[in-house]
Length: 347
Image (tube, rainbow, N blue to C red; front, side, top):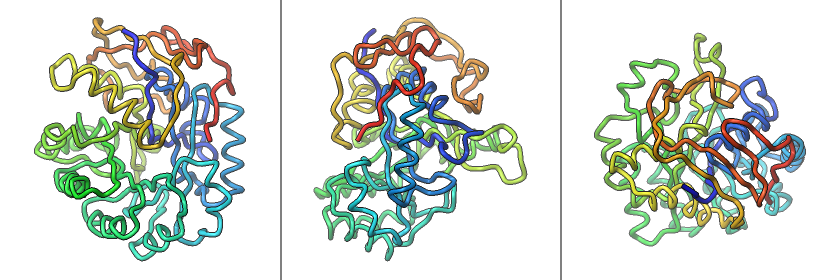
């Protein structure tokens, strides 16, 4: 089966600053293995990407290492509004964190208001905004009409507010992660730190609500957030799980089970992301998938540097066999064929 190259608008590849967890080569290798030809990396690095200089350093590092295409977001705590003019043509949006997550990179609503007023671009503002913060952000969107994307929606309460905002005509989109579709708080109890992320895993009722309302979801985003086993087993395990290599097979298996159509997978992993970020794609960029053979997700076969997934041991369908990017085969049968730097930094 031939499908368009998948697009993940939400990854954390940890480079620069935390390359013991992941780097641009291993992270984009994981992307290719999962069928993703394009990924977009978040700004909450060890040193947050809040200046044009830091952004330029990050782009230079990616240019040397990436084997898939990659784009970047800028970050703000409300103190760097003077930097915006320098970076509009280098990034795909602005990411704000309104709740506690990795890096302690957090803003309150008055700061969000200032940032929205200063962001003079039609490129979206992406939001880590959980249940308690969504209503306040929606009021700001009403006032500014700024395109805004709610990342990793995880509960009925969150999605309900976003559906209402969409139906009122606001320029909002939203994404959902595979872990919030295929895991619940029971898995968090069973797997401990290996199912510890923000937003937290929710109840089966929340998961059922998201599935029932999947038509309102604009993109599936892996929120690929790798950490080492040593970190996860430590006293204060960090938030996040890897996801680039498991997103597509989980969705494809849901298709086999009658929960999702192939058209929906393409919408959520290709056309939806394209529309959110206004991405141009090439016809000679595609993936080929074995749709019939069931296989096991094995930690030891992962390309991600962290080497584990909360879905390890699961039987799935939809194994990615080849990945072709702009006419060049970059991945085949588990092997990365492209050289570091053969992917493009998109701007």
